[in-house]
Structures are given as C-alpha cells and as structure tokens.
Length: 321
Image (cartoon, rainbow, N blue to C red; front, side):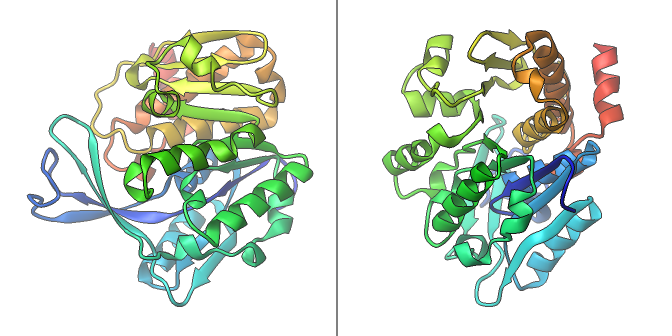
C-alpha cells in the first residue's frame, strides 16, 4: 500500500445507530439501524470511492462490531494496515437522530471505547510516513493515550513531508466543556497545512458570526488553505493570495451525515495528485466545485458511507448544473 498518492486518515471509527423513522427523538425511536461512521473513516472511504489511495489508522474493539467496521474499510478499498484491535474495550457506539428541524442529536457510548485507547507505540509509523496527505480530526485529542498517539502520528507525518489536513469535526457532547474543546482544538491549529471548518465550527471557535473577517482571524502563517463549508450555500476558501466563495448545489436533502467528510475526501483526492491547486485560483475553484458536488450528493441518501459518491456521480451533478 506504500508509495504513490496515499492519503492516511487518523482517528475514530464507530457505529451510528440511527432511528428507523426520521424526525423523532432517541426516546421516541421505534427501532435503530446500524450505520458505520466516524469522520476520519468516512474520509478514507470517500477517497477510495473516488478512485484515490486511502488507509485508516485507529483502534477498534476486538468484537463483532470492530471486525465488521474493519471489513467495511476493506470492502471499500481502504488499507487496514494501521488498524489495531483492543481486547478490553468495545468499539464506540453513537445514537444519532435527525430531529424534525433537520439538526442532529447525539448520544455516545464511549467509556472508554477502543479508539480512545490507541497508544503511541501501536502506531504504524511506516504507513504514516509513506503518505502524501495525513488527515485527522479533534475527537482523538480528547483523552489519553489517544491524544499522545495523535500528536506522535502528526509529528511523524510532518517530518516525512506529508501535507497535514485538519477537520476539527466538533462534537461538543464528547468534551468535558466547551472551553476545553476550544482550547484543545486550537492547540494543534498551527501545525495544519489545510483546515476545513463548518460555518457552526467557525462561530464556535471565533465567537463571531460567519464572515471573511472571522475566517481570517483563524489564519496562521503555515496555513496553505482554509475552507469554511456553508451547507447548501457552498463553501468559502482562503489562501495566502486570494479568497472567494463557491456556490453550492440544490439537491433534495435527506440526511447531512458525512457531507463534510465527502467534501474533504474529494478535495484531498484531487490535491494529492496536484498540489498547485493551492496557488492557482482557477484550478482551486474547479476542485472545490467538484468537492461541493460530492458533499451535496452525500446529503441525498441516508447514512454517510452508503451515500459517498463515485467520480462519475459527481461529474453527472456538475454537468447537470
């Protein structure tokens, strides 16, 4: 799996249990369906589905669910060379409901879950160093030993010359407090080359309403590209030399789960082949249009992984627009 344009995703993979009917609270749900998820794993599968090379680094429970998730990565063409199994802890579970207003409500079972117990010694450093892009979130920063593993993996990737991609993917219920979430998310901010935040995350991190000024207050000297996703309104982009906004696509939205992961997966897939997209605005706009199309398609089906598009699906939407 080494060599070539490998994108390594680091962090958690878990199972979302989603109600069989939408628009109900967790308590009212008559039943639940298993939906594999976890943002970094979704990104890895998004990359593979678009024809890119992807690997996942993380820890699963040595249980039915953990082996099921490892199987799903494999089926989708994602290398599992970075996966460890924990004998003592379970694979993480999340109960997720889409409320009637379309917003998601989460309840997590992680006490501790296997992903939180990945140690620095368990990292497949050869795999990480062979990547061109190393992608991660912030959930792996919440507790030890996973936090130390995250920092070590990031350091190894940086030294090997990987492009570091960060999507904080804020899940407030998992953090001890909002203050700690903000501090820890920002603690590794200046290491990343590419950062993607949603409009809600931008407001949370800056305390300001979404604007160019708010976004640019998050700029740091090592940053190459900052992206703010705006839901159906598309996304804004910022580089050292230019910034702008790409409009979104109008689709019939069923479930927004995984849209951001699909977007970043598509972007990384294109960027790994040609890093000049960061300095060439016309190229960047094309790539971001493609990424927005991938994000939009993902909202048209339930669940993240089943909804992640292929390249031809994305191109069809682009043509139709």
